[in-house]
Image (cartoon, rainbow, N blue to C red; front, side, top):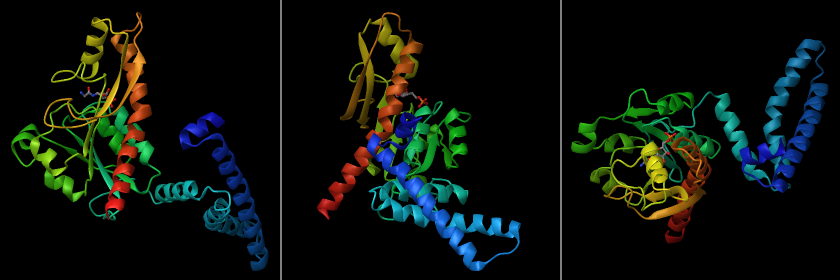
Length: 302
Ligand code: GAR
């Protein structure tokens, strides 16, 4: 259970202990304060007193926990945690709709995906509790793709794009600008990125490829075809490549590569599973690292 929590909250053992202590201490202080307030008000009716007690608990819990978290060094975690609960409570999505104007510091991501969307899901979940990075929009070229259901579940706006306009028209640049997109994340998006988009978002478009580039890249090399080719060639290892996108398919500068073993018993399906595990583990954190590195560089320049 503790390991599961550590993974979910992305913290080490000591931080987990301090977080749980904050919950316990903050909760006790909140209970104490609420009882004192009830005593002070002096409510006679038992049912009314329970209702008021619950209301007071709900109101006092966030400040009690936040205050407790400061000496225990867990303020950052609880700030994000309470922000997340608050947004869920208001029924708001984590998406930045055009109306929700992003602050100068917010990084708005557009995820381009055409498939099941398992990577998109992991990215969404990773940034769910991060007020500084938002999934603004999901762009898809396939009506009915699984990623659209994921977008719906997380209340993220979607845009279905058409080939003609994407390649020969305005490449949907104005739509992306409406959402103040700073970074474009390709997560199983199989169309080539047009020059117009590359010029508008230079060094800001990132792709994930399910092989160790430059091997098994290029036009027609995607998803299952990659794994079939890797197995047909008796490769002993495969992996993932996270890279910047340029004018040529699967060619831009590599940001991260991670490997996995290919055994004699592997099939394209079992290999796909291993690759997906690597992708889910590394893509969200790599995106975050790229954004944070860029932001700290901008701050230094300013
Ligand atoms: C991922 O494995 C990704 O690497 C691959 O498509 C899959 C999408 O899965 N992308 C390419 O092959 C790009 N050349 P998902 O829809 O479950 O995220």
